Length: 242
Ligand SMILES: Nc1ncnc2c1ncn2[C@@H]1O[C@H](COP(=O)(O)OP(=O)(O)OP(=O)(O)O)[C@@H](O)[C@H]1O
Image (cartoon, rainbow, N blue to C red; front, side):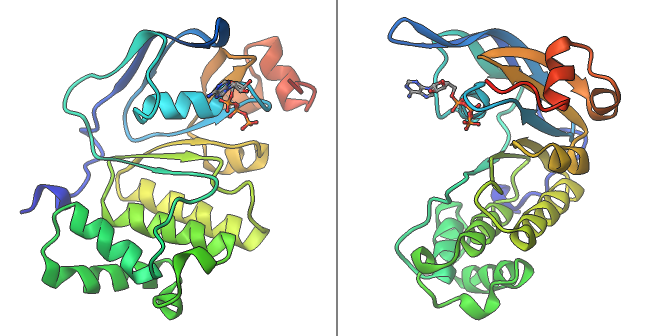
């Protein structure tokens, strides 16, 4: 079986460790030294006010940004990963071609690409739009296309950076449904959001950042019932602004 098509397994996703990781820029500290370990097939929701460092944390985790100090390492074989952004990065091609291209890059035989791409379009409610240029799709449609593309690569870990912040309620529901589907298929989810209710709906655990500091890494049930820290309590009351 082509390695890219190997099903993700819930048990064996390599843990990821942040060890003394910090980020600074021109002498200014953006992320203070933090230790964090993400493991298992969990849904980790990264929360915090604007500028807290959520996107930095995700970019570090996905290897898009190198830490200024410390290291981010996989405690074993680097898993298949995908990342979905607030504004999807799509090719200037049709919706279908965006997906067949992703399959080509990941080594899927030419003869299988169209059928698999069409299956994914159907799954994400985009079958009628396959010929439409991806760049003219609505925000919600583009996000679903980005999720369909990620779906095809069967990631073991999916990073999502504020994937719903520009979407209407129906599109938000569709993205949340997709996140649940990824997780049910055995994908670890690491996702940033501003939306407390969304975090309540989706999270197994919460990472709270504030002012570039890691404040809490807590099981969701405990966090939403009674956060350990004053910052966590203030955040839940809507009083932690920046
Ligand atoms: N390339 C960069 N150069 C300089 N400063 C940066 C850079 N990237 C991020 N920052 C700063 O680092 C801090 C954390 O940014 P980050 O984007 O991680 O915040 P965030 O928690 O995702 O915020 P938001 O909720 O507003 O998206 C911010 O003060 C931001 O201005």
